[in-house]
Image (cartoon, rainbow, N blue to C red):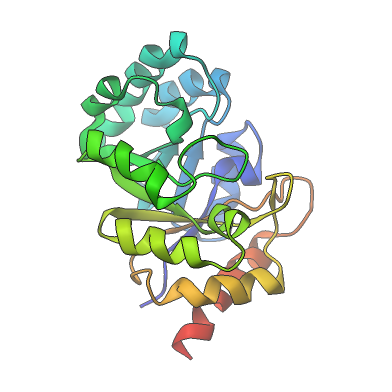
Length: 235
């Protein structure tokens, strides 16, 4: 079985999800995360979903905005109801969940992501456990790059998968640098990631977040490196 691998639209073409979808189709990649990381991107993306012909993708998720205040929380949740109703997983950063009750409407379409070291919450099992208790239907997005940045030994990454692996919906993969930027995957990252690949079921989609929108790398190279990380385990 071939692992399902695709990209975040924001990594391929920042703010232009249509261009990113065209790139994915050209490369015959059937896995996509529709990115609305900036608040102003959310409404246009949600409005466009019915016209994007997403039925030719085997897996579609949507990434909620990563930065907004409590005054925008209900509006964001309301916008995300449509993607959730279409059974698209909705990836959310724990630090923008101010009132957990608001998010319960998304049920098991709500997917919480572990965070990088900049964030005040969501970096470790301990920090995520309370949120999952409050939102017991929520699923888990494992960002392996964030986990490696927080703990380069990959111990916390192992603990995250042990604790929340039964909720795992997708994996984010990139090299997360000291400034928390998503860089192309390096050979060292491939080696580090391979230590966990056996714990990720073969059918869980891998979403590549390495920023290649300005030629930092290319689609085929990043897909190959993601495959390499898993091949080292299964060889």
